Length: 105
Image (cartoon, rainbow, N blue to C red; front, side):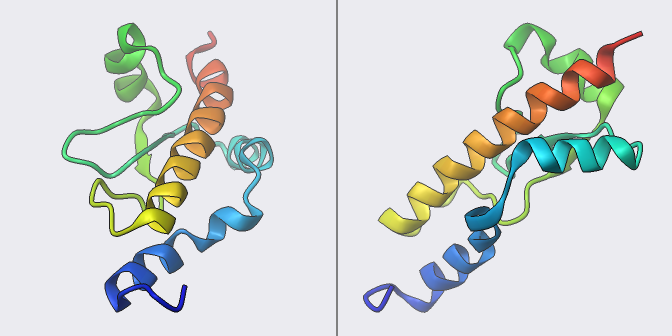
């Protein structure tokens, strides 16, 4: 991290929560609170990792959306890219769990 720009360091720091994140635990906690919103990546368009394209519209309208802290489509270096990819993997796992509960009748 010593050879990164201040902007990249800030971006990396905003995703540092991923170091201890557990998507299954987070999803269980959200469901216990009654929060069935899906996790989106903040990009030019709303990106919902882990949701099949044919379910996107229904999932957004029925479940709702919240944005993943620190996500962006601007990549500020190799470390930041790896964290963005990890964030997308986290969101995909989280969304698959939440979606099952959100869409069940």
